[in-house]
Amino acid sequence: MLTGTSEAATVNRVVDGDTIIATTEDGDELRVRILGIDTPESVHPDEPVECYGPEASEWATSVLDGQAVTLRTDPTQAETDIYDRALRYIELADGTDYSVLAAEQGYAEPYIFDGEPVRKHDQIDAAAAEAEADDRGLWGACR
Image (cartoon, rainbow, N blue to C red; front, side):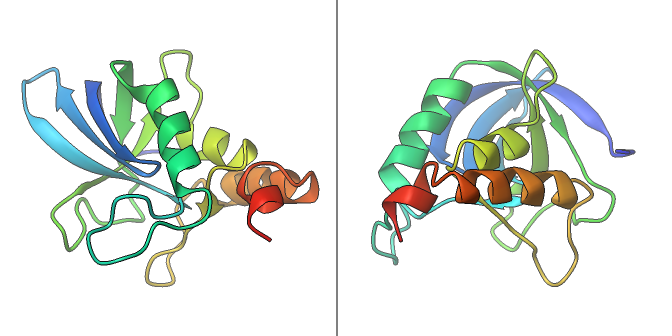
């Protein structure tokens, strides 16, 4: 399903539920905006903290901080965004896709930028729909 390029990296810091700082095997430091999801704001300088933002950030930190991961591009999306963040999926060491997991656990909603869904959109959307139906995470806390 995915034909994008991949590279091994280590997560140095979690900025919030959908943004991290990682170092690749080549030693490059990347600010990464995670593809396919949007989490409530918790650190945006011009936006208020949103319902479930701190919880999404704490959960992301518990899952990602210090972990060896695979960063993967999506050929349907740009390499970087307007903030010069690398646009990547994050795969955990066991192969789990972080975007799907975050949606499944109720920490993220599916996100489509500029009308072009990511290749994993259907998986992310189904996971979020299940979380919403069960009132998991932000779905139960922020209605």
